[in-house]
Image (cartoon, rainbow, N blue to C red; front, side):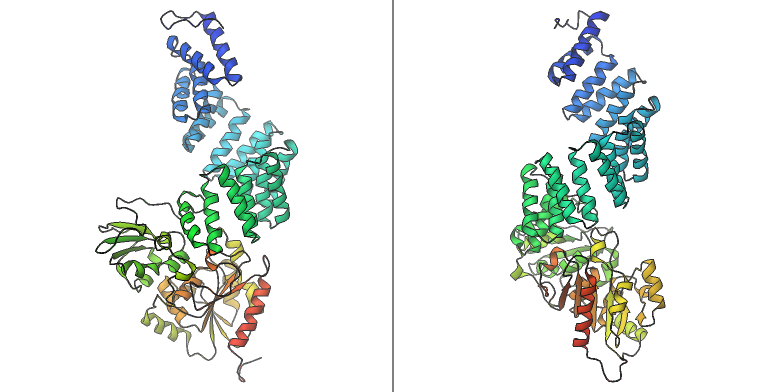
Amino acid sequence: MAPIAGSDAGLDAAQKSSLFQQAVAFHQQGQLRRAQAIYEEILKTYPAHSDALHLLGVIHAQSRDAARAVELIAKSIEVDRRNPAAYGNLGSALYAMRRFNEALSAYDRAIAISTNYTDAYFNRGNVLYELNRHEAALASYDAAIAINPNFASAHANRGNVLQALRQPNAALASYENAIAIKPDLVEAHANKGNVLRELDLFDAALASYDRALSIDARSVPAHFNRGVALGQLKQVNAALQSYDQAIAIDPDFAEAHFNRALLWLLTGDFARGWTEHEWRWKSRLASNFNERREFSAPLWRGEESLNGSTILLVCEQGFGDTLQLCRYVTLVANLGATVVFEVPPTLFRLLGTLHGVGQLIEQGGDLPHFDYYCPLLSLPLAFKTTLDSIPSPGRYLRSDPLKVSMWQERLGAKSRPRIGLMWNGNPIQPNDRNRSTCLADWLPHLPTGFQYVSLQRELRAADAELLDSHEGMVNTAEHLRDFSDTAALCECMDLVISVCTSVAHLSGALGKRTWILLAYAADWRWLLDRTDSPWYPSATLYRQPSRGDWASVFQRVAHDLYQSYPPRSEDPP
């Protein structure tokens, strides 16, 4: 290589071109340090050399210094605003910094200059996917594929979008197209497994994960999603092994830690489960509920004395989690603390009945001074809760007597046992398709001789139409404004039957007789294969014997209803 002239000597055009070509050659060979040194030397003499600025920025991007990459590539664009590759690489650096809207603008500019810029369409699709603009992302991947039909990664990422759009069969076809083009594309095999899992084709899903791992044994997503599938099959030990392998490769992979925590809690290994559950704050799996809030006061971990102190307890995740774990408020108050409890508006009236609350505040309201804070789901860890030490007072919530009287009047004189029914929950809950049912599935199995009362505050369209046309069912939805109304209604029931929703927790917290219908792979709080719950002594659990088998559950419920409330002679057959 010719010697590099000093910055004070200057370079003629031939020297500049020769040095730049040498730098590009080193860059293409992966010798980034040597290429960087030459780019930097050129820029000492020619600070406005757009190509050197651009490619030096690319090296910084390759070295994971995205901020410096953005700075350099932006300077190159100031010199030459017609280089589509510079806009494309600027977009990639901005994407790495999660500055998605700016990245999208850069890709749009690249495409405006070069309409056949395949990678720009592809990367634009990636940004749109991150922005949850799925239809636009699909169009961008389609544009990339129209230019290059053999773009395997575009087919694979198209599958991801179709999966997000709840089009599993179309997603499966996209993954298979990607694999046909590039049989060793690990991501396509792993994500194909995810679609097959969504379609309940577990043997095929596990085969896809295994194929991905045969190509790359260190594929963290493949190990992780294999664990998810095994967990859904209740193969707990095998699922834990898959999560362990994912964590061994990437110790900071929060999703694997979080799912491992749920399995430990499911098996009653609370000692490890509660500690590992703190990974929820870093996991995207839990981010659909809430993000961790930071306060100036320290987090209480159960180690500091609370006597004479004020502590803020904050709700997180779903209503059911709050109803289940608000029992710890009393324990915190018993340590001598003044408890400030911040709760969602729909729970405000109900949780005012909880013993130990010093001050109840609706979320979004002004907070008073406090010395410590603790999220609700961290309290079991702070109290070192085990299966044998679950605080289970039987009844720890109270309903409003006036509202109970109003419901009794509205329902009229009781001539038959009253059964409250809750057949589905929040449709955005990640596992809703497995835990929820529809009214049409229940009706053929409900025996006569009972008054059935819907506890559903929100009704899906098909359920609402069927409920209104069914004479034997009472629709209460228009009168259920918040959980205090539902609690009072539950008080009027002889029995509450619910799938795994917040109402199941509410009824249990009220000490009401409660039958809870559970999917085959149930939530961690119901533990494994038990018919009772240490969280709710008044609850009985009815579990699917196999995935999706609600009919068997309904049949057992009908049998037990007759056993618990034998028909009277005047009841119709």
